[in-house]
Length: 210
Image (cartoon, rainbow, N blue to C red; front, top):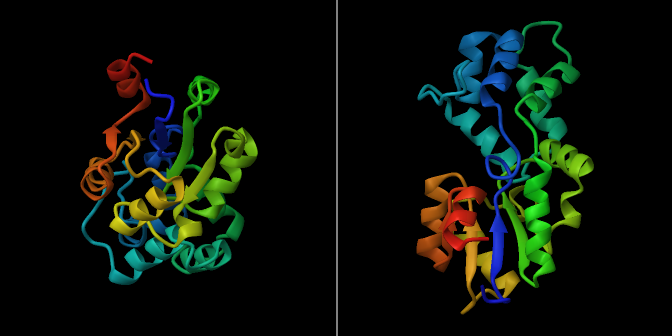
C-alpha cells in the first residue's frame, strides 16, 4: 500500500477487550440493580437500557469528554451506592470493564510504522481507564499521536472530533483508514472526512492483505 497511508485505531473493542457485563455486575453489587440501570444505563449483562436519567447521561458524557475529573466522577457515582461503599470499590468496579490487549495487535501497529505508515489512536474514554492501559501497555510508544476524547473535550461520533483529527494529521487528500468497532462512529467518519473504515483489525488485514 502507499507509504503515506494513515491508520487510526479505536482503543476499546478494537485494541483492548471490554467486559461490560463484568463491570455492571460489580456495580450491581455496590448499588443494586435499579440504581445500576438508571445511573450507568446498562443491565447486568452489559446491555443498554432506556431508563437513564438526563443527569446520568450528562455525567457519563462529561467524564468521557474530560469536563469533570476522575475524583468528581467517583464521588458522584458513590452517592448512589450502598452505605459503607468506598471510593476504591467504585474504582475497582469501573476498572472491571477492561479486558486484555493482545501483544500481536501492538506488534501489528509496530509493523505498519516500520513500513513508513503513520499510526494514531482515536478513543472515547476517560483518564481512569486510559492511564491504567497506558501504564500497562505503553500505548504512547506505538503511535505517532494520541487523540483522546477526555483531552480534546469532544467525542465520537461528533463531526468536530473527526475534523480536528483530520487537520492535526494533515490527512486531506491522503489515504486514511479508521478502525472502530461501532458502526455509528465509522459512518460519521466516512461522511464527515471520507475516511475508509473497518470494524476490526482482522477485517482490515483480510481486505488489505496485510
